[in-house]
Length: 82
Image: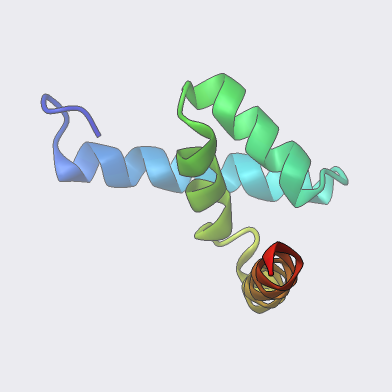
């Protein structure tokens, strides 16, 4: 959110983007593809795009699966570094 935007404006934009993400998902886009679109359209960093998709209502049912996969990848990476 920029310093000139009100929290209400940011919330409205988030609501609109949730609808976009829901449509992307309905059209068969994967979470990774949704992150790429979010990044390109909103001009945000990769980390911010991931957070937006991860916290969206459109992908809320997959959030636990994302978290489990993320933890598994981190554990595997840690074991490989030893």
